[in-house]
Image (cartoon, rainbow, N blue to C red; front, side):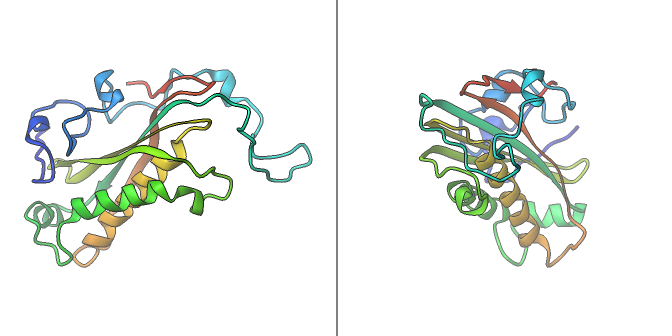
Amino acid sequence: MPRKTTSATSDSHANRSKGVSAESHETSPLDRAGHDLDCGPETCGDPVEERAAFSHMTEDGAVTMVDVGHKNPTQRTAIVRAVVEVSAATLDLLKHRALPKGDVLTTAKIAGIMAAKRTAELIPMCHPLAISYADVRFEVRDTPPSIALEAEVRTTGQTGVEMEALIAAQTAAATIYDMCKAVQKDIVIRDCRLVFKAGGKSGTFIIAS
């Protein structure tokens, strides 16, 4: 499948056959593990975890913020991926930075990073976290015309950064829509999902390839 990256993408990643090309020279933990973007729904996580009780709900059904004060801080990482489908004409304008609002991917990257840092203001039961790293990376695909994106967030703390990565990815995808909507209204945002998390009591989760 031919793949081309915009000038916002590092040349050192242009020939990678798997994963999402990054603006930085750093590859994600998922890429280093050799997992492709278009993978199946299976996971290697603990199935018992999926049957656990809802942590944000009391026995009588009231919502509650989980007290994480007793937990030991650990290094946490979360990666979320999504795909934004556009027309070939829109993609051509994006690659040439010819859309009315300007540089789409740079704007989307900044929006995603900003959103990660403000997740606790949007999701009621999320804890405010001291994020140590946030990034959004893109790969422009000609066939089918689309932008694959990957948001990664890290912290050292008592709770994970899955929500921060999800909000970063969804905000970046929505920003791509906003930057392109003048020329195309039927853009599709799809397959936004957590593909990797590490740290904490539940350990490592990796989406199966």
